[in-house]
Image (tube, rainbow, N blue to C red):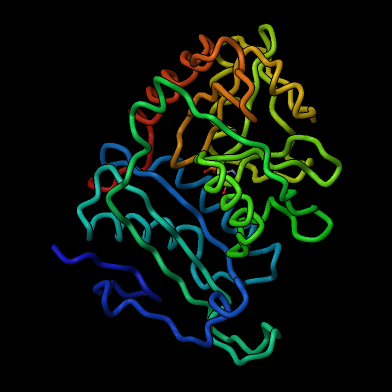
Length: 292
Ligand code: PMP
């Protein structure tokens, strides 16, 4: 079956799903996006993803051409058209076609793209063995220049850090804030466990307000685990009892080594495993149905 892409209100075959070379999403990374998961025929936390897209769009003064409900419906419709049960959805809104200048007023119509694809999962063994990370020398964007809370198409900051990871032979890396505290990873949020407490950097530190991060905080509180949002230095990761990352694609993935230093006892920890199980129960049981 041919893949169908939602493009400006129509479902078109992948080969015909093309945008102008004058689109400011391409020319300047001027746009916003979301990465969303579907599990067992339901879209996980779709409302939250659309809300974050709306916040990102508002932050860059981009008027979304679709209402909240229309975006929900277009996403679900694209999944249905592609017979997606377990998949990954990419929702992109660019400033649209303009001229070669920066001025967004030259772009009258935003471009709306929804791609629903069958997922390429992280290999199952990383959930059993855990990941090795590095600390990247590329610092996370300062919120005073480009707020990392805006999920914009401008991912070059993270891409430079990702290249460092690849060169070091690892799949993820920790990015520090401009003042040298832990912020997040190139495409995931970070948590550490110290004693019985779960700690993660606060959104104000200049991180993406992750949907998975919020779900894990909820689950932890529900389990009676104390959660603290605070800034911490990289040394706290080295000396933590456990460390894990959260993200739509990664879900909740244990970390066992950072900068060639063993974290905890070098195995996925008990709290990490407990929260991963709870997270899997959640993704198995809630979501917006694709097929009524
Ligand atoms: N941080 C960054 C920089 C990301 O790109 C992502 C993935 N969207 C995350 C964190 C995790 O966010 P979420 O749980 O909403 O996917």
